[in-house]
Image (cartoon, rainbow, N blue to C red; front, side, top):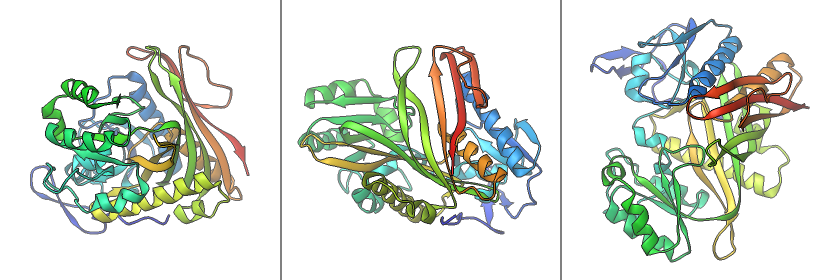
Length: 388
């Protein structure tokens, strides 16, 4: 896979949570385990899905599945519930991308939407460790927008964007299309701000982006599990949750063996090719700005949509260096490649169907099938639909 190496590989010393160094040149893992850490997942289907992912990873690595790690285990390949921060990686003995399905970041904000956009001005509030130069590097490949860490900066950024048309206010850590508000004017911005905690904005930031219409959301990424490496592009679909909300409903991926070079070499439609180029540029810029980054799973969401002036825009919305909604499709593709060494290209999909259990077709890999105490009746599955 053509990807930057991890920032602390080999025999580098990492500080442990107690401040003591931890040698990261560890023996090979002997088991695969999930690890929840500080992540909070209220839905049972999230927990069940992670366990199914980990079981499939264990089979690919020819290792036993050891369940969920209650305390840190330095002899495990880890499938964390969330992107790890450096201290958590040290605790778990994660020395590089060959020890986890996911990623490690030097600061928690690096794993959120916050890093996609620049600050509104050089004097704007920013957290310690913020890479100020990254905003200008990413500007050509992301939507027009800003990240703010104070209500005053939200107002400054909002006024600038509203001059172009409606904007979208986005919580930096929200997933599945949730935590977003479309703002039409200054009065609406003030109402939206009144619903936000100033403390939360200062702690994690908030994103303001130009609102686009008639959108398509692409997924572009790479995944490596042991010797298995894939790259892919695909599209996402939306569905209605049992509560009536518009949420993520699955992904359809076109997957090849290898990494960015193999993906870029595919004959792609113009808009898809541009989405792939933007994802690669985003990946390289972010890993250059934050050398401590490490990720075996790199997924980038790219939006293509119409701006208020009718211009078609394409830009990276956010990154995901953790198990996500498309992971089942990635694993299905890797397993197909593992079964057939001559196979070079597959189409794989994930589906999330609300309202009924037992909706998976025969032969699909089921990630959840039941009645979640919070989400209600739900079926989540993955399958390979075409091999070439």
